[in-house]
Length: 515
Image 1 (cartoon, rainbow, N blue to C red):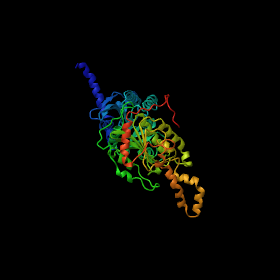
Image 2: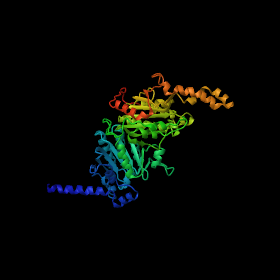
Image 3: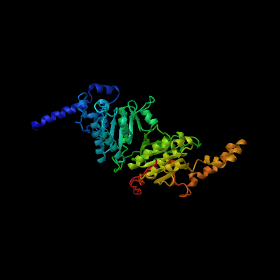
Image 4: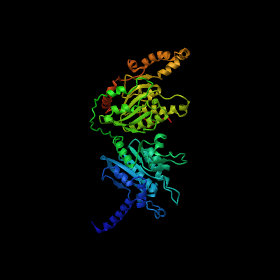
C-alpha cells in the first residue's frame, strides 16, 4: 500500500473511533444508569455476530456554530445492513448519547435514504428509536422539515412492500412520533419507552407504554427491558417474509399435523350464557401450542397474532367471549382491520375463530362510530386475497357474521363446530321482539322463564348449523361441520389446499376505504 493512502486511512480511523464513543463516556454512563443499552449495543444484540456493516458513518451536523459546542458523531444515527437468523435486514439505531438522540438535518436524510434502500432492495426495515424529537438549534429554531417529510414519505411509500418494525426503547416526541405508528409493528420498553406527539400531558400514564397498549392501541408488544424487546423482535421477525413478493418460510414441524385434541370438547361451557377464553383453543391447535400475540391488552375481546400450523406461518384472529362477550366494538374493529390488511399485503394465511354476538347496539356505540368502524372491516375483508379459513365455534350473529369471514364473503374454507349458530341477531333478541306480549303476560303469571325457554328452544334449533347446514347456499353456509377434536387437522389440510391460491380483484388505481 502506498504511503499516500496512510493519511486518508488515519483520518477514517479517527472518525470511526469518535463514532464508537458516541456522545462521550459521561453520556454513555447516564445511558447505562437509565437501564438502557447504547445504540451500537442494541444493534449488536439484535443481529447475527459480525454481520452489521455501517452506512453514513462520516456524517456530522453541518452547522459549524452548532458542532463547535457539542460532538455529533454519525449525526446521532447508527445505521447499515445486517443479518438476523441469516436473513438480510436494514436497520438504524438512534443514539441518545448524542444530543439526547435529537433528529438533526443530516440524520433525517440518512434514515430517509436507508428506508428507500430497504424498499428498493425488498429488505425488511428495523428502526430503534431513543430520541427527544427534532433537534432544536440556536440559529434557525429547529431541524429543517424537508428531510423529515422525505423520511415520512418513504415510510409510507414502502408500506406493504417490506415489513417494518420499530423498537421504541426511549422517548419519541414531536413529528418523530409518527414513525413508530407508520411502522407495521411497534415494540415498546415498559420502563423507558415514551411516545407523545405534543401538548399537555394530563396524567402520569400519558405517553407511557401501558397507555399506548391499553388506551391508544398504538403499541403491539410490551417488553420488560431492552434485551426483552430485542428477543421479541427476533421472535416476530421469524413470522415475517422478506417482502410482499416472497413467500414465507415453512419450517420443519415436530408436532403431528393429524393430532386430535380431546381437551377441545371441554372448553366451551354447557350454558351458552357462560364465557370461555379463546386462548385455550389457540393453544391446543397450533404447532406446539405456540402463539405470538399482538396488542394483547388492547380490545381484548378480539385476539390477533401469529402462529404456525405444520410449519406454515398463519395469522389468527379470534373472538374472545371472555372479554365483553366477544363483541365487535370500534376498538376491536380497528385492531382487526389493521392486522388482516397486513396479512393480505404479505400473503400470510388468515385463520378466523368466530364466537360473537355481533356489533353492539345503542347510543353509546353509535356515538363512537360503530357503523363506520364495522364498514372498514367489511371493506377490508371483501378485498382480501390471502388464503382465508374460518371456523365458527359457537355464535355468528348479525353483521359480525359477515365481517369475520362467514357466509358469502368468500373465505376459501368455512367450517363449523356442531355448536355453531348462525342468526341475523341473537335468538334471545328474536324471542323478545316477536313474543313480547306473551312474555309480558307470562311475567305477570310468574312463568317468564318457562315461557321464554319454550319459544327460545325451537328458534335456537332452527339457527343451529346442524339445521342450517342442510341448506347449502340460501341462508348461511359452511363447507363442513367438523368434529372439534379434528380442528388442527382440518386447518392444516385447508392451508395446504390454498398454498398456490390466486385470487384476482377488479383492476383499479386504488380502493377507497370507509372513513
